[in-house]
Image 1 (cartoon, helix red, strand yellow):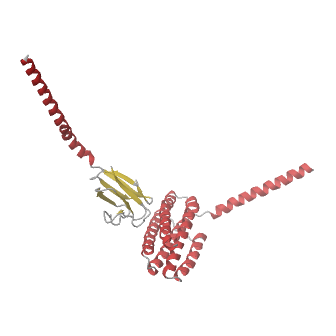
Image 2 (cartoon, each protein chain N blue to C red):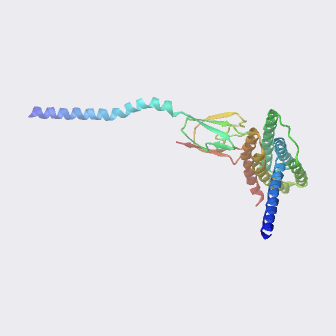
Image 3 (spheres, each protein chain N blue to C red):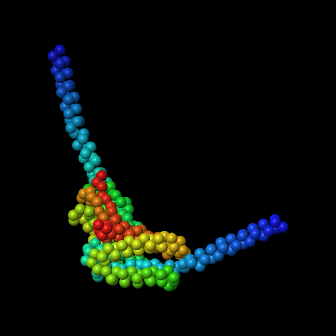
Length: 181
Length: 124
């Protein structure tokens, strides 16, 4: 009887653990972004930084901040243009998803925060946000978008954008130094 | 005996003259032989590719008069700007475009759009 109980408990444990594992795999599968969703995230993330740059170009008087903002606006537009060209070529229509919505909600709050500041406080807030935003974007591209992308050309475009975002981060950190004094 | 001495003295003078002539003329002969060949091979063209936000190679070993060609194969526009003064500047190098320059001096350069991108010209 004891042996029977042992095997019953063991079987139950095995069943629960395997169902948990399969649930976990299903959950991962459900969270995995499709290529149209990845295209949407990529375009949105780049557009958000262009919008931040436009605020900086309008509000800042600091030459380094303005030059950095101009570079962000130009470079991220270039990435959008290439992403849109690739999506058009592949017949992929960017699809809004939870990640896109989350990015947009965060961006609205950040724009409001930036618009409420002026002078050196604005410059510092803008550059601090650029450092944080590029760190988050690099993490998203490296750990979510590239692994999830199934189309080889889309994956390649995302991978080739990584050095650009890393250079932007280094540039932002360089400008940030003058506000830490 | 006198005749023998005279012959010996003349021989020594002849040999010395030959030696001097040979010593003086041979380097010039070599130089004139080598000069055109050196000129043919000395002026070369080096290529620097702008890719993945880097100048590849980061350092170019060149000679004065060589040509360096920069090719922008990146996702975004760049430029080639000398670190010191106004030694050289490519203007905006759009995606897919090239810019070339004859080397006149060694020096470091960068991309003024992305100041963390750096390169160097080293004179051999």
